[in-house]
Length: 382
Image (cartoon, rainbow, N blue to C red; front, top):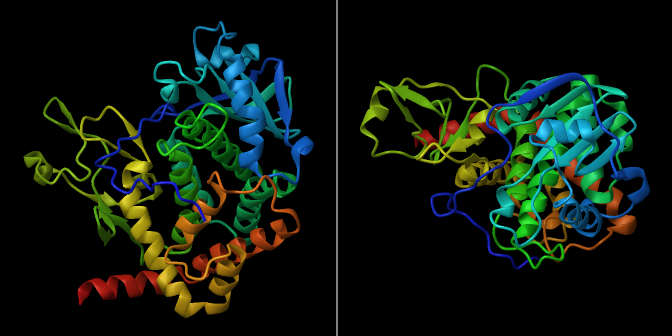
């Protein structure tokens, strides 16, 4: 398996995400014709990582000096940058990314999702993490067949660049799926920015890994219901959290892990939701899901430990599919399996086996979510 260094402490590695903290959703806008447009149907049976490395990474680099629009959405309406089309009515648009080697290139660019047939596209979103996680939070509480198809679509895209299942999703599902892919491509490009300039993944900026893990964990939270819920936050499993951004007098305070901030004691907590996997740093100037890595790793580890007992065959099937003898954290292992310089360009005949094993594990975490939640709460009382 992979040898890359894992970045475990967000206190030592502050992530900047170029996706805005406030989403901008545009309705019925005309998207320009792209010089660099890729349809995923033309790249089936290779991993999405290989697709991004061999096609999208060089295209974004090549387009870096050609974009003239002052702002990002104008770039979309002019067809600047790169388009990645998943289906005829689901696309992503990637504009104003700097080229490898340019100053702060990993902080550049914006990725938009699009749903709807042209010439006017019904939904175009500059999806922030808050927007994405808010809509995902609501969506994963929906009917099981829809949720299953959503995760099947995510996995098939990552495993074999196949967006066929996207066509089965509701309009809401397509929008959430498009947001996921838009941000995933953005974060994967930034991960490659810390590599060798040829599309390899560097040891820094592994924000695609964080984005994927939190997306996979969402299905568990979707199964928790409304009475017995919780997440790991600042190292403890809890049902209540602080707001990411707080006003005290005239000052903005970001208090996640800010145990020494005296004003923190004045603040009221609120029930958690999926957006709390996204946080600001202490200075309130940068944000992302990688800041909560210790917490989502703890969440994944606790779920996996209990899944081993509750659904041993499901967990064993996943371990076998990932070629692992031991799996401490299934969510972390899945991300490692796909986001690695050691990952193959294609999983070949194993692609469907891998997809099905992961999908069944995820859906079973939804089935077992209430029992797992109860067990974690009880264990913290001891």
